[in-house]
Amino acid sequence: MSAMASVAPPVEPYYQPCGDEVAIFEQCHARQLAIMLKGPTGCGKTRFVEHMAWRLKRPLITISCHDDLSASDLVGRFLIGHQGTHWAEGPLTRAVREGAICYLDEVVEARQDTVVVLHPLTDHRRILPLDKIGEILEASPHFQLVVSYNPGYQRILKDLKPSTRQRFVALDFDFPPAEREIAIVIHEGATDYATAHALVTLAHRLRALQDRGLAEVPSTRLLIATARLITSGIAAQAACRAALISPLSDDAVLVAAMRDLVDLTFI
Image 1 (tube, rainbow, N blue to C red):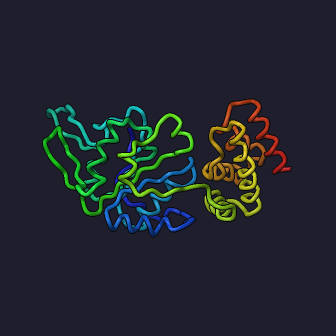
Image 2 (image 1 turned 135 degrees about the horizontal axis):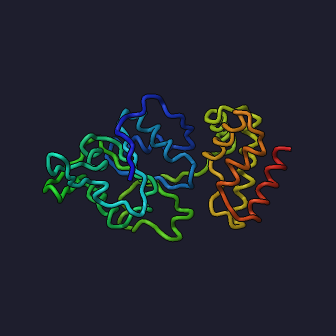
Image 3 (image 1 turned 120 degrees about the vertical axis):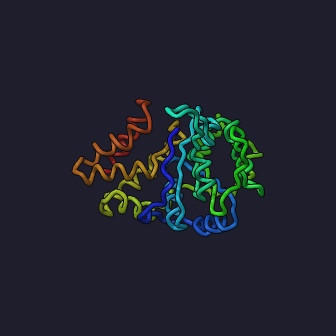
């Protein structure tokens, strides 16, 4: 389990709002409400949280969830050192004490017994029981819990229990409209309008292949990576094959179909 340090972003993370998500997040923070971000991989959920931490001037602790994430990984554990046993706080405990925004990325990947640890923090109690040291920690007024997940593919095998879902205000994310996505690719990919327009047009064509068995459609993140390669001097077709097509699938038929679309886009 890895967690980013609890420091507020020093420079404004670039983010293009698509609706009223900024206002809703601000009101949830002011009213101590937990937030759930739902949307496909690479559509801007993490960047949105980084932007809001900067906007609210709050430290941000990001935790990438996975199957082996335990409650102790979040809360803390006793460690044995040269001077004996000592208590080491986990990232969730630090966020609760410091009044940070704690962001659990892909929370559905964590075990259900781990997710249950979040429940007392997401209702009127706003407490974190530290059973191993006999302490009940009250959350700082500035503490906010944010979780995210991709309902598109995770719901097939995993999902949050209703008792967990109903503790959050939910914001639905999707890939931005074409012109906004072009603006994002231009800014983040350091590219020109023509290249960004071609990449976004290609992405829309590739996303239509989801009905043909493509498990994950190309994200805005992949478009930015492709744009950066093109800007560095890599030929457009080669950049698309390496940064856009190969990460999506190993299926020969799908890969061939996607490469045909690349060739049609960058003639």
